[in-house]
Image 1 (cartoon, rainbow, N blue to C red):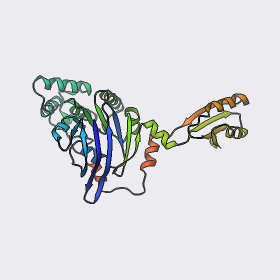
Image 2 (image 1 turned 60 degrees about the vertical axis):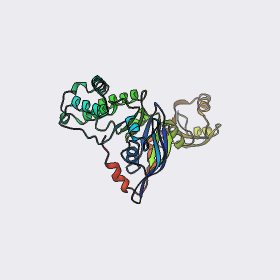
Image 3 (image 1 turned 180 degrees about the vertical axis):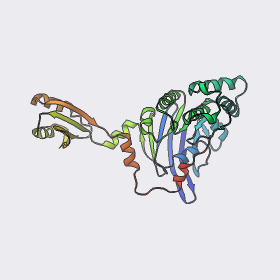
Image 4 (image 1 turned 30 degrees about the vertical axis):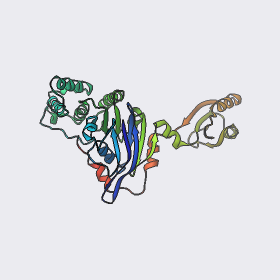
Length: 324
């Protein structure tokens, strides 16, 4: 549904995005993560047609964005992070105007506006002037604007920014629902949001995709060997030696902060949990804990994208978003 092939974008001598290729399939929700200056905003601007790539091609729902720009743009609903609304207009008035800009006419306008108001939970402020709305409600008006024309593809840039916890939950539920009807590309800095919503994650750094996969696969890949936390009440020092002799165990470290807790490093693709349980039963030790350590998505993200230097022209690009 979204396909980028070898897209690059330069600003003078600075290459913000370099030979980037990825695909988002029909019905997928894909999260795009990256630090400031990674190239997320530049990539989104190219996908939405606001910025032409210096090289490469982009296809939206089968339409080449450069060769058949109008048809491709009709398939896109876009919610930018810095949302520009007309503050003097009422919510329903603004959405009606936007629906007409999308080419809707007659009764179709009212149906589209009513559906967007309901789905984005803003029916109660439909008559309210936009400048009087909270930031959270303005964000929901922007999301309603993005889905007015029932686009096949949704590009959402920080969709829950500025919302209170209740609104965040509601918008996440809406995005999850939209994912069953639309292809969604979601750019966000909120890592739990990616884990809760996205089928796949792609991490950008310095204009390239440096990691891609499900949240679980990225965590497993980053962690490497399986590591188990084991707490054996009353086992004492002999437990470490006994654990180390078990099949599939590479090494055992004693946790100095918790009594009778051990960190068991296992061989790749080895599962020693049953052997540890049987050992505890055999020795009469009370097994208080047997859990697997996993790197969080946040840990993976930080390790992959931390550099000593920062900044550059793209940092300014990420700070100024294009309006829908």
